[in-house]
Amino acid sequence: MARGTKRRRSQIEKPVVNRDDTIEVDEDAAVGDSQVAVTKAYARLAGIRRGIATIDLADDNFVCGRGSDESPVNYNFSSASHDVGLYRFISKIQFAISRDSETRRIHLHDHSRNGTLVNQEMIGKGQSRELNNGDLISIGIPALIIFVFETTDEGQYPEELTKKYHVTSHSLGKGGFGKVLLGYKRSDRSVVAIKMLNTQFSTRCSRAIAKTRDIKNEVEVMKKLSHPNIVGIYDWISVTKYSYMVIEYVGGGEFFTKVVDPKYNRMGLGESLGKYFAFQLIDAVMYLHSVGICHRDIKPENILCSDKTERCVLKLTDFGMAKCSVMKMKTRCGTPSYNAPEIVANESIEYSPKVDIWSLGCVLFITFSGYPPFSEEYTDMSMEDQVMKGRLLFHSQWRRITIETQNMIKWMLTVEPAKRPSAVELMSTDWMKCADCRSARQDIDQNQRNQKVPVQAVAAQKDTNNNDGEKRVVPAL
Ligand SMILES: Nc1ncnc2c1ncn2[C@@H]1O[C@H](COP(=O)(O)OP(=O)(O)OP(=O)(O)O)[C@@H](O)[C@H]1O
Image 1 (tube, helix red, strand yellow):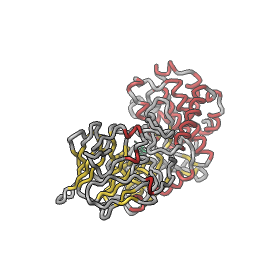
Image 2 (cartoon, rainbow, N blue to C red):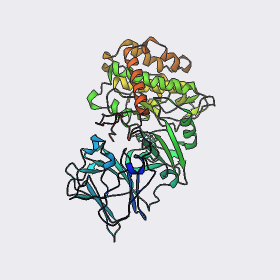
Image 3 (cartoon, rainbow, N blue to C red):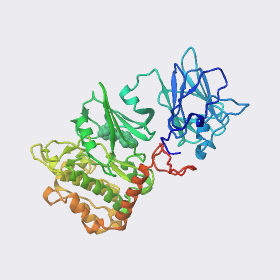
């Protein structure tokens, strides 16, 4: 059945009830949105996989599983029986949830052979674990997330946020301003990243030059953008102390981690893979500049990978420093080792979006060779001098890289901005007309097609078995 299609009441499987509790099924609920409602709920199991109901918990004990005459349960997963990939993992009694009437602490007790996981950690048959607001509950394997556990009495997050999104306790990462949490849209259960920014720390102080972060500007910039190699924004909710940016979930981690992955032996990713990524990044920057935006902080840490595969799609993120490039740009910002000479030079010189090409040149230098072009660690010269002179050291790593590629990188790292190429010029070179670039284009298109498919959770690692013809992908968190 297609998502969102309403089922008649007679088609909805009622939960098996083995006590006198009143458990009502929402008459109009679709399979994906069905809600088992009870009064005075202290918590909720929010179903985030298709066919899994959202269950209000009001009693001190609640049992889930396939159930049987001998093993009655409160919720029997029958609405998910079509989901073979999941259903085969569910035991007659999967898990129970109990609340201590005195302490009010809530625990999950695992009763299943295949196991139940909380926040991707296996609990194990006969074992228990305390549940906290936002915890993820999976069945059998970490990727089979079915519920987000939500307490109803907590004002941990603002209502403006929680009425639209399930906010989980799973942290995707930390930045200078706060953390990034995994979330799900209530409307279609698709996965999102929720970036929590503490607005009281107004100065960006992590890996970049200190500068007041203008979150409103960051959001305005992101709202203007739509490109497969740029992280999309869905929502922005700002309350007193925190701002919440709800953005596209990109599950493969920072590009930085890939570049320094020991499997590449500090030799860089090589010609073919390097060009595959170069195409994506140049395309992203060409688009940005075409809509009049200058990123001003391009570096491997601000590029995310769609997944953990070698040839993944890259997404440029973190527009905290971005600026509309038709306005005068003079501010010294960005990250020193990726900053163009005209930024390093002095405050009073106006600069252009070509600063992004320089930073991109630095990113590609390290991508192809495994070491940065400019660094404080090169003690023969101050980093400022290295940048101002455009001093590049081509070590042995470059022996396996073609002269054409070396020349392209040198061109991007031209000290004089007027002689440095634009993204359009880069894209129109023969260097960009290669099999790796064409394959990058195809993979980007495929990635976009996958994203348009309604899924419970996105992050294409591997397909699960399912018998409803829907392409489904599993999150690898
Ligand atoms: N869209 C996303 N999807 C998945 N994970 C993300 C996403 N955005 C960020 N992360 C994770 O969170 C981490 C911190 O995010 P980010 O760098 O954007 O925060 P920040 O506050 O802007 O950091 P900085 O202080 O470097 O500017 C990232 O390294 C990444 O691991």
